[in-house]
Picture (cartoon, rainbow, N blue to C red):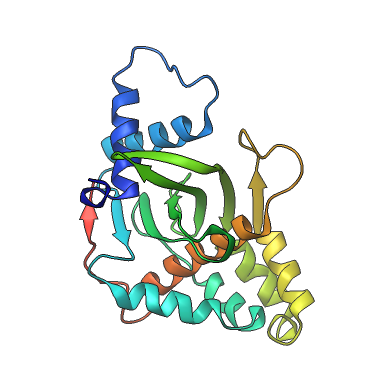
Length: 219
């Protein structure tokens, strides 16, 4: 049954199967690319931390949801504190709004040996017969918390008083990198919001009192 396996686990299983193939057979499928990438991270950069909204740490997701309701001028300082000690981490949670009924997996991978530089992959889909199926093509955002800190240091309190200044600061620290399915036409607003929610989860986990929380699972 679908409830016996999480969306994140289904992605990792598919990726592990793809790694067994002699040559990639995804035909440019962005989901297959992401599944293989995550399975590779689990195999070579272990442990791959997996945290689920339905798992054992509701305080993490509750706090991230609370922060999501705050104005951007309040959240920008918190996002600048985002750090990740592990090479790779995955967060799984329910989609909301236009994505209600979907599961969301946000995978945060460190492309370099820096805790404050993260590649954020977002995948949206459903489970069907134990298999993960995409409803929105995966997408990638690179976020540099050090660059955000530098910008905030230059503009001072403007970022906490002006939405435009806060938005400009984040734009300077983040870049959407093209993946199949999103090369043209821009990124849907609902998908962009998931990027910031994923980084909010990471910043909450790195924050005081939560940085040492035990993980739900390791792949």
